[in-house]
Amino acid sequence: MTALDLSPRPGAAPFPRMVAAQAAMEARLMLRNGEQLLLAVVIPVIVLIGGVEGAKHVDLGLSHRPVDVLTPGVIALAVMSTAFTSLAIATGFERRYGVIKRLGSSPLPRSGLLAGKVGGLFVIEVFQVAVVGVVGLLLGWDPAKGVGGTLLGVLLGTFAFAALGLFVAGILRAEATLAAANLIYLLLMAAGAVVLPSSSYGAFGHVTEWLPSGALGGAIRSACLDGGVGWRDLGVLFGWGVLGTILTARTFRWE
Image (cartoon, rainbow, N blue to C red; front, side, top):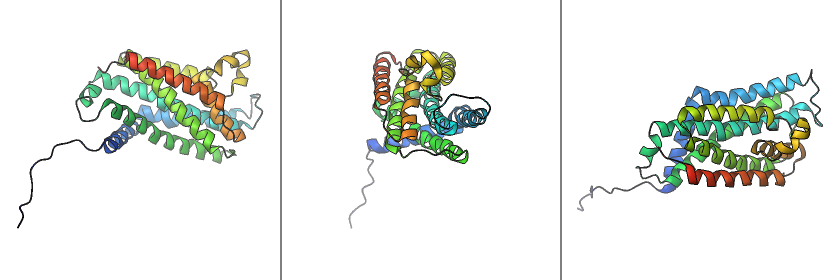
């Protein structure tokens, strides 16, 4: 009878499994945090309902029905809130409390940690898009079949804002990151052409088209209103993503 080999075999789990576990943990931490849920779901839904109801009393000068313009804009706002604000704040406090430093000593490499964070973002964004989409449909939203353009917008928007969020979190202290991320979020929501199209901002609209917020909103609106792909907006998002990645790689401090 052959003896059972019970000798220890130390070693890390396969890389995809480690990334999946990290992504699941990141998503759970976001969903358990009341402030993150406020940014991810509650504020976008309030903006959508308030905007549609407000459009009944105020002429926004839109070329389509308000609900058809506002719903893709609020989807873009939801992506921005998670990929930029939530990620920046969470990462800033993880740096402060030494979480990232401790993860650096685990078998999970830095690339796996970043991939896990991005994977967690996508989990939350699927939930956000579903919630905002359902609310929009209940309000009468009639989207075009621009699934490909919407998906590209969400992917590149996540890339751009996640890179910028990590840049902010990597150079500022946790409290400063909290203030800066929320301030930038509010400014872009109000004047960054993410919820409303650039044409609603008059002469300043030409500037908002080159902001990551305006490009993200424009890309998703193009897909949902016309069923097309906003290649110019996607190119702007890609450029911001590359810039944010370079800045993060050069300045990010792990503690």
